[in-house]
Structures are given as C-alpha cells and as structure tokens.
Image 1 (cartoon, rainbow over the protein chains, first blue to last red):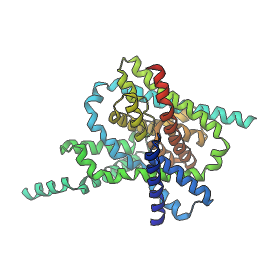
Image 2: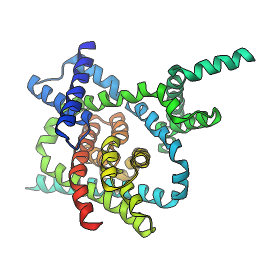
Image 3: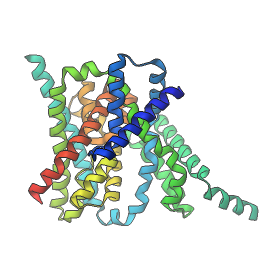
Image 4: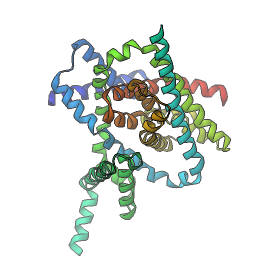
Length: 115
Length: 238
C-alpha cells in the first residue's frame, strides 16, 4: 500500500520535474499519469495493491475539488458584474462540447465498424 | 463564554478546523445527493462548496486562511490524477482499437467548447480579456490558468469558470447524453472528460469504469491539445 502510494507520488514528482525542466504545456500530474501508464504497460498487469490504492483515491475524487471550488469567494464581485453572459457561456459551451464530442465519436465508431 | 471564544481563536488558526469543515461539508452534501436519488441538481461538489462558502462568510474567514487547512485535501488532486492511469490501462484495449475516432472527436469537441464560449461573450459585448479568461474553461484548472494568462485573461477567474464547467458537465452531461441517445460508455466518457475535465471524470468513474477511463483520457488529451493549439488559433482572431 505504502509502496504503491510512493510509486504514484514518484510518477507525479518526475512529471513535475520533466514539465518544469522542458517547459511543457501540460501539468505535472498529467505527465505523471502517462508515466504510471507506461509502468503498467511494461509490467503487463495492474498489481492488486496498486489497484486498490488507486481505486481508494479515485472513489473520492469529487471531494478533492471542494477547496479549489471554494475559491469562488474571491471573485464574487467580478462574477456578479458579468453573471448572465458568463453563466450562458459556461452552460452553452459545456453542453456543446459534450454533444459534439459524443456525436462525433458515435459517428466515427460506426464508420469504423461498417468498414 | 470567554473560554469558548478563546477556543475558537485557537481552532480558526489551526488547519484542523477547515480540513474538518471541508470533509464534513462533503459528507453532508453526499448524504443529500444519495437521499435525493442522485438528482444531478444536488451535485455533492456544488453542495459542499455552498456549505463551506456559507461558513466562511458567517465566520468572516478569508480564502487563504481556509486553504491552510483545505490544502491537504487539495494536494491529493495530483496523486488522484496520476492514479487515472489505472482505469486507463484496464480499458486500453478499447482505446487502442479506436484511437483515430478518439482523437478526431476530442479535437472537434474541444474546438466546440472554445468557439461557443467565446462566441457567447462576443455577442454579449464582453471585453477581450474576459473572452481570453473563458476560452480554456473546459481544460483542467492548472493548464487552463496557464493558457488564460498567455492569452491575456484573468487566471484566477479562469479557475472558477473551470470548476463551474466541471460541475455543470457532471450535473447535466449524463442527461444531455441520454437525450441525444448516446449509450456507448466510451463516447459518453470521452464527451464528459473533454467538456468537464476532472470533476466530470470523478462523476463518470462513479457510474461506469469504461466511461471513467475514457473521461480521464479525454481530460489529459484535451489539456495537451488546447495548450498547444489555442494560443495559435487565438493569434488568428485577436
């Protein structure tokens, strides 16, 4: 358990270091995810203890966004000034992205299956 | 009474209180979410943020004091993002067989997110700075903030819009996908992750592992694609 938590943190650490050193446009943890993924490809399977450590983290992932979300209190004035356009923009754009991505994926998967 | 206020002074200065507050608020919001039949309007992240904001306002606590305690929870976002490699690996056979469809869908979806958000603000006559602030809002917060800064927006406001987009997608994404009749978990996950990054991914993981894996993949790829392409695209228009 501790061993695999160390592995996860090492992936993040290497991710952060590489991103910092090369000035890459992705965040360290995203590169860390790629590194852990490569580890799994080499290993050929997910060790059981790593699986349960990761599942424990991911099951409660929603909780981890609460501190960042609370940051809204610093922008209440700015947000209230442009509340209508910003809400409309977030709602329309998030919906559009979901619909376009899903329909495109369905269309392309079908096209590939029909070939 | 004097003792009580002394205790409060002590507690409010230590990280314990705000850490506990964060966990308790999330527990309460999750309880309401479950009791309410997982109604999307009762989204636990939204509920927990509302409770914490109310407590901070009542106790006149600023965000930085709160964050001293909450940082321990916030820190785990990094390891959790790394851990997304596991569902991705478990679903790798799905990903490998349709990588072209995944890439093309992701790019069109990402473009739709940026173009529609900027278009709405442009129609509303907003400033260019505000448009730059909202443009990267479907990308995970640390990347979105970096892009907003590069385009001349306000990074900290971008972070708020990113979170709101995440919550919106987690709330209404599944409903929208059912309305347009997309049942394939791969397409559903990809769509949620492209539009709503980690918050959408957290929600998708609770519903289906394939959807969660595709959502995590979409989140990572969209961060990369937007960071590389948006600044170039922006230069063509502004």
